[in-house]
Length: 230
Image (cartoon, rainbow, N blue to C red; front, top):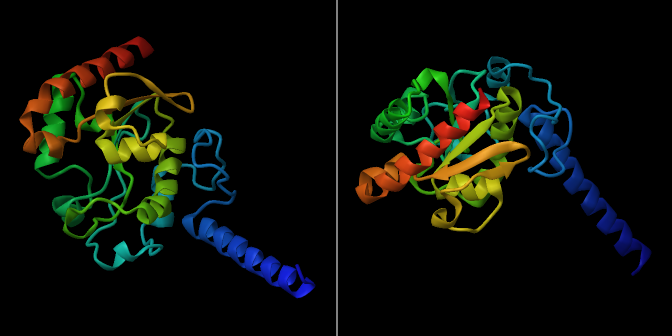
């Protein structure tokens, strides 16, 4: 390889690295994420509370979804909760109200929580994406890649003992797997020391009520794991 060619490749690599570091700074982090599966409890970031972190990122324009959103949907619930529920993205009602799981699927989630003796404000609820995809389509890989660091920082701040992924997309993204929801649910996974469960998204239950029995088994398992923490 000629010297000029090596020099050009070095410049390209430097430009890519510079853009990546700038992106991390813009996201609100002061250390680089080498691997998104790094223990979220050990990732150092400047934000100490969810409120502080929200203020840092609420005007995010890192991807094109900011152009069509009504509200940036951060998350809701007890910032000290031991249990965190994570979906894929806001829907229409969530976009309008700026709060996750407030539409019909959210109302069903509230009933599911009540069935295992949780109030909505006792847990923390968030999504991987903070902005609604147009027409409620599935999140695109680049949108997940761009927004997931926000969720990982929420996990680091909250330090939950149990995470429940609601639906295939959230489960596959966080566990970095292509396994189906059927293969993932019904068991305890490890997410860097955090117990991790998978169940159906409430929106899927509205379309396919036959999945409610399996979901009931999943959330009973979650409750048992929670009770063992005490």
